Image: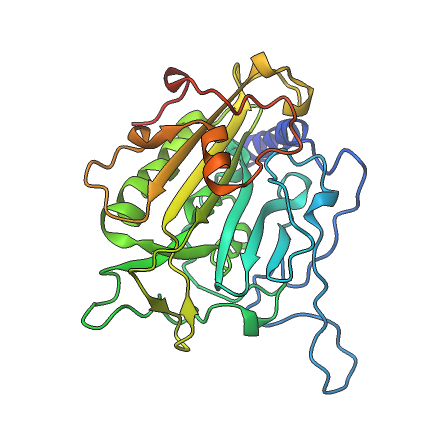
Amino acid sequence: MKTKTIAWMTGCLAACLVACGGDDSNGIEIPKIPGSDSGSGSDSGSDSGTDQPPVFERYDLSVHTGWAELPAVDNDSEDLYYMAHFCSGLPGGRNYSICYSAGNRISYWSAFPLHDCYKGGQDRTNKWIYNPNLPESIQPALTKGSYLQEAGDKQGDSYSRGHLLASSDRTVSEAANKQTFYVTNVAPQWQNSFNGGVWSSLETDCWNNICADTLYVVSGVWGELTTASVTDRDNRKCTVPSHFYRVLLRSKSGKTGKKVQDLTSDELQCVGFWFENRAYPSGKPSANMTSVAEIEEKTGMTFFVNVPNAPKETFDKTAWEFR
């Protein structure tokens, strides 16, 4: 049984490497990110034996031209920090990428591949930690609890730490799951019937659309809900986004054995989901389906920049399995 299991995992990883493009098509070497395998919660950086603070270099996501899930980046922004998270045992070592806003103390988006080889028997680690690749001083203090609510609210009554990449999307190993609990992978999200309802249903239903060719996803936020206010555990304000979204890309057949970059527009399909940051009693993600182009227009973002043939202007509701 153990031999069969190892063979299955090896075959799954090989298939996912082909579908995900393995490393980058341009041969870029995957960097060693301090703490990426261990999930350490401490700052990492150069250690010169002096009292100088660690040096954190800004990460350039645009070098990863083979990653189909990536949106356009703004390397000139002083507020935005981009980061790719790597973990041993994953296809090409790649786990997920983020765009983090230091001024708002939230992530604007997380981008990631979904494939069967990211699934396993790992339980939810549920240990919130600082992202070891960025200074703790610019991250929200959320390791000891969720956002501080407005006066009179109890923990979890209003806004919670809403995952952009879900814990349940990375159950293949403890190391991969730990990285989903970085405090830079969340934003304040209304809990009852949104984070704990329709958004959770959306995350679950994405696995109904997994294919051999890999599903590519961006989960993100937009705007500011000025009628709400939350702080981290150090009483520093964290912006409450007015909207959450998710955009998806995959091949139509799901089993071409090719990279999506090598497929024509007619061989690909896209869809988007757009939500206000509020309660959704119906709990059906499909009610909020839209085109990726529509979300681009609302947010000013450009998605799937490494897949020029992505059919972002249209979507076929019947081509996707969402409740």
